[in-house]
Structure formats: structure tokens, C-alpha cells
Image (cartoon, rainbow, N blue to C red; front, side):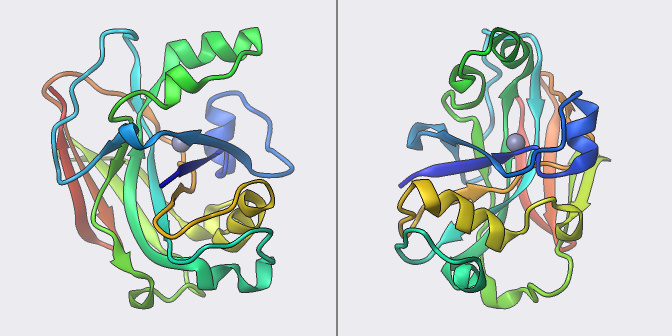
Length: 203
Ligand code: ZN
């Protein structure tokens, strides 16, 4: 099982971090040991004083494929959930400045929170899918699929150009504006299409 992540897929978020709008999806990966599921708490690591949440729609792939054409790519989506791409922001900035790979800032243990995956048939993919993240009861991020620079089909087509996608793989599809730091004691809640998808306490 592989975890793919898309960076800078919402214009407002790319701008808030001072990044240019990409001409094709920015792709990176996390290992399986990054997964955090079942509403388990997130233990704040000590290697960065600025761990950020990035709430994202997550796709689970339902069948294997390679070089998938965009027009059939939607048929590879098995289910859709919500997750958080936890990011060690200071470390990431330092690595970006040096032009180094940013794995340690993005792919560390438990950095990929995953909520409940819902069968794709429950969604009308022709309409925007809305989601939001609440921190301590306040909305800190919200977005919907109409704000994405690259839609689900384009993402799957792009990722599968380079990597065989396999049943069970996950794709984190990028975060909207509003990313920010977490502290011990914070409580995060993700809402997918208005229903609670995950909760996570920061310890
Ligand atoms: Zn992200």
C-alpha cells in the first residue's frame, strides 16, 4: 500500500505559503508507517516546534492501473474520506530553501491521519464535495473540490504516469487555505459533506 500526496492543489493555499501555482500536480509520498487511524490521538513530535495540520480529501484506489487516461480515471476511485497531512513546517521550509527532499518534514510516523472512507457511490462527483476542519470547535479550514487546481481524474492520471497505482493505495489531494500550527491539548474534527469524519486529540 502506498500513500501519495498532492501539494499546492488549491491556489489560496499555495499563495499563503508563498509558492507559485504549479503547472502540473506536485506529487510526494508517505510510507505506510505514516498512517494514523481509528480516531487515535496524535503525539506531537519534538523535532519541530511548528507542526501544522493540512486537512485534505483522501481517495482510496479500488483497482490496479498504470498510465490511466483522465477520462476513465474516476473509475479507479473506490472510496473517499478526509484526512490530515501533518507537516513539520519549519523543517519543510529549511529543506525547501536548501533544495533538499522534504520527506522527514512530511512522511514521519503518524503524519497521515485518515478518517472514515465512504464508498464513492455515495458522492455525486459532478458536484462540489465540501469539507472542513474544526480546531477546538472553530472552523479553521474549509474547501470543496471546485477549488482544486487539479481534479481527482487529473491527479490519478498524473500519479499513474510514474507509479503503478494499486488497490488500497491512498491519495491525499491537497489542502485549502488556512493551515496552521497545533499544540498539545488541541482537538481536531474533520467534517466531510457536513458529517463528522474524524476526531483527533493532540497529546
Ligand atoms: Zn498536504
